[in-house]
Amino acid sequence: MELIHESAGKKLYRDGNRLIKSFDDTYSKADILNEALNQARVEETNLNVPRIIGVEVIDGEWSIVREHIEGRTLEEIMARYPDHEDECLNFFVDLQIAMSKEKVPLLGHLRDKMHAKISASAFPATVRYDLHVRLDGLPRHKKLCHGDFQPSNVVITADNVPYIIDWSHATQGNGSADAARTYLIFKLQKKDELAEKYLRLYCIKTDTAIQYVQRILPIVAASQSVKKRPEEQEFLAKWVNVCDWQ
Image (tube, rainbow, N blue to C red; front, side, top):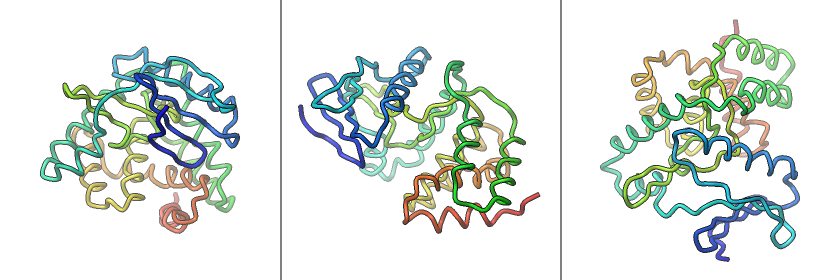
């Protein structure tokens, strides 16, 4: 096996036409099995999704084994061909819209996940209450939501077929909340211009008011804050506290 990527608690290995994602003991078995189950359920949609091969214990670590998709991420393509950023962004948004049209009724609900994260956040009770109320006020949709939709999670094959990877956060719910999450990811990556361009494009293509997505951003920021990354906390707190609560 060839180690190709490593992050906190996780390692990614290439083994021929298989990709092995191994987790250390900071991840529970239940969470690992749930991630594999999420992806297996999304496989049944019309999207191109890497096929889950199995869940195994490899070298003492629980691991998800899926098929390897040969190609480059959309993030790599955008970095290599900056003159084609608008074209790539159009492709990215169209793919997100296509994803949101899919239904996976056995997935957990985004609303429940966000309520739990708001409750687990360190914000004062008054702020948490307002966030819960704002979340409950959102229209109840059952669209497929990725939860971490960004260009690095889209792999383009040599014949231009897009595969969406990393379904660990998949839920069903409000598609605009998923878009708010993508916007926040770009902002956290210091890609401010790309974030604004993305949000405008998404709202135009979906006929969604920008103000509507902006009202969801404090909820998404509070949800992100539970990861407790020190470098993000001040930024996220500003997003949560800047709101004109009603």
